[in-house]
Amino acid sequence: MYFFTEKMQSLKMGFPDYIQTLEEERRKIQVFSKELPLSLELVTQAIETCKQQLSGTTSEYNLNGHSECSEQTTSTEGPVLEEFIPIKKRASSSSPCCDEDDEQHSHKQRVSKENNNSDKRKSDWLRSVQLWNPDPPAEEDVSKIVCGVELKRSGSGGGAFQPLHKEEKSSKPSESLSKTPSSTPVVATSSSAVEPAEEKSLNEGQRKLRRCWSQDLHKRFLHALQQLGGADSATPKQIRELMNVDGLTNDEVKSHLQKYRLHTRRPIPMVHNSSDPQTAPFVLVGNIFVQSPEYAAVATSTASREVATVAAPARIYAPVATHPTPVSHPPDDSIKKPQFKKVKLFELSNSDDRANHSEGAVHSNSPTSSSSTHTSTSPGY
DNA sequence: CATTGAATAT
DNA sequence: AATATTCAAT
View (cartoon, chains in turn brown, orange, green):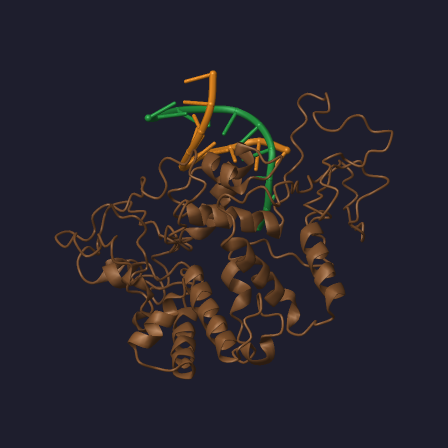
């Protein structure tokens, strides 16, 4: 479990030193937070754990731990997990729904402890971490999170209004969520008397009400993706199953996936070449052009020489670093083709196709290796 | 027929 | 920009 402990010992250092090393590592990785969100997570977690061990207390997740864990406040957490979560501005228009989960969470947390300390970003992070390990077979737990489905009436008016109170009740029969509110597992939608409708309003054509991808939902999505070995090898159905979210449909996931992929794939910025040679040309020689710190990292390791000119329409997919995650025993059941799948990285590595093929030895943990190296060109098989 | 990915539509 | 829906290929 605590692989880093081993590592530490192998490096013959004490916790303090190891922690330092880890932190250094994290700094390095941070640059690639977009490509290696998980790595960052891992390292961060490792650090946390070490610190905890240091301070003796082995509390759950460090709610108190920040005594020290603060320091590197940097801006890590944020971008890491969020990745492409729709940035929701509290006050801005955005969507009237969706916030529920986070509202709820933050609420709870606030109540339980007024430790507002470093923004809720952290709490989010923690939560996500929480969600990570458990699951495989777990599912049952939260299962019932039925994200709100945006109504989006023709209202048009500009919908500049905000319910300000998500605690569903009265007015909207909306089958808003009820994500495992501890007890009351009763799926029963509060609908007291009226509102028979429920869903499926006999209205035909009606475009489905938009599914709202709350952070929580998205997190689930990401988790699933993780288990499936990345966005490129995951398939909507599988994702949906792993997410195990009640009303979620394949199409919704599919759509979300599509967006995710698009957003994830290098946005090949404006094609305005020709004019202004200053900024244009460098582009894909050896496919190294580092653009928005995001999605970059791709080439790095592979990059090296060769190729260039490439007439190929070459959509060199950026793997978005996501190791299949050992996920010991995923809920398997129906998951047949976990990680390996298409991934069309045509051979741009010519001769040296070896390199990877390193399943057995998960040497990946060596913190000191850092950056690029194994940007996990996802299953390149 | 079911799933999927890309292209559209809203 | 974010979802939904349609289209074409499996």
